[in-house]
Image (cartoon, rainbow, N blue to C red; front, side, top):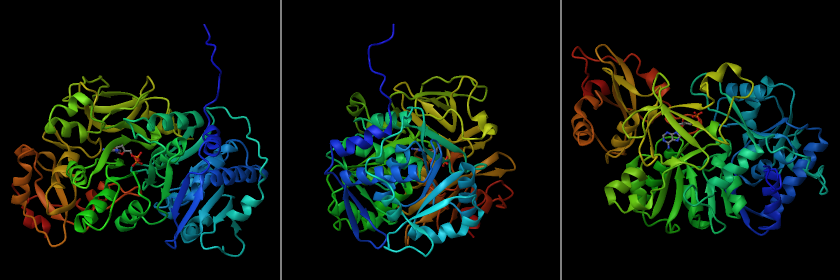
Length: 549
Ligand code: ADP
């Protein structure tokens, strides 16, 4: 029997309308490139997003065509988040931290018809513009003026009209597009649907996921070009939260200043950002007066437990989450269930530090090399596979990559995990980073987390290096805290409480910084290349001192 319920499409246009009808006075604050603050409202954003949609329509943008942004996090980027999909086009957020060749490859692959660029990013645009196909460029004029011959975003908006009418949209129509940062092979594009984005926003806002409300002041540190800023702009505006954008200033001090001045209650970003923030807070504990009980979602790579604990001292609650560009990105969040909270500190920490359990509507399973499903016993390791209403079922225009999906349609994440009987996932590694030593696996993530818990260590990455006897052995690459020192023996002693002797890194090298990807994750491939000629000594080990030379 068919239901008697309306068939009402889930589109972002509903969220855009809601901004004006329900929360017109809510504020959106941005730190401009000249560091001054810009303030606007939901009503104004609604008005300008619709002008943008209308201007795009008049400019001849067709249903499904891509309109790209090359932008920091700011108010006009939010207008694009709503205005581009409103007209049936697909918003393609270009990653400004990639090199010009990669950006050109991605913009050409996506066939971007219009590129909206921040004026402060024109020097980057200039480096790849000649490699692009035919396109129109529109410039956000932060500085008030734009170079001769270029079109200003403000002038472009004036070509739109207030009586814009939304075209008919199907909820499965594309609304936005992101490319994975391509740590292996060429970047691959994912096209999100209106429906998937709406469902992702609804679920993401629920209390045990990110838990947004209109009482929140939300500052996404995660860039709007990184997997839709994890859905924060849509989820945050859906509930009517005040939104604060950091513009180009992602350093710890600038962020802490904004947290304090705007009384931010919720933020989110990759662990490297939060490592810098905790170090700044510990250096000057009295300097910033932050909202008590502030929350932040940390994901993109494993949040070190020691970091989560250090934030507790400042009354900042870290929500550890796992996700992927291919999943819009939300997959799991580490909310600790009441009966586990009641189990004492040790049990609480075990779950708090894990990657958490699946979001509603996300299905998980993990399989061994033969595709055999593994038990949820917290012990058996396997590759995590996922499916759900906001999980990609293919890459855009890339049939060769279809092997990332199982025969029965689950997406293969490439992450090696355990899942326990409570449903909590523990990511032990990326399949390409796990250290295969003498037939056993060593988790590079576990080692890194433990090493970063040592007071002398600022950052650490552990990589697998080929070994004559054991196939691979771990090498610890450590960045020391200013003025600190560490010997291999001290490191072994620190790790031996948690790890068996054969799991300890064979060697310790000191580096100035851990190389990072365009989204701020550890770039272990670069380290593996840097140390590919590393020589173990005759016994198959190298002393820390020798290795560090
Ligand atoms: P890319 O693969 O291009 O870096 P994503 O940002 O989509 O882009 O990265 C997804 C990957 O990031 C996951 O497959 C996983 O390996 C890693 N990741 C994300 N969140 C976490 C987390 N909380 N803990 C460990 N790894 C994580």
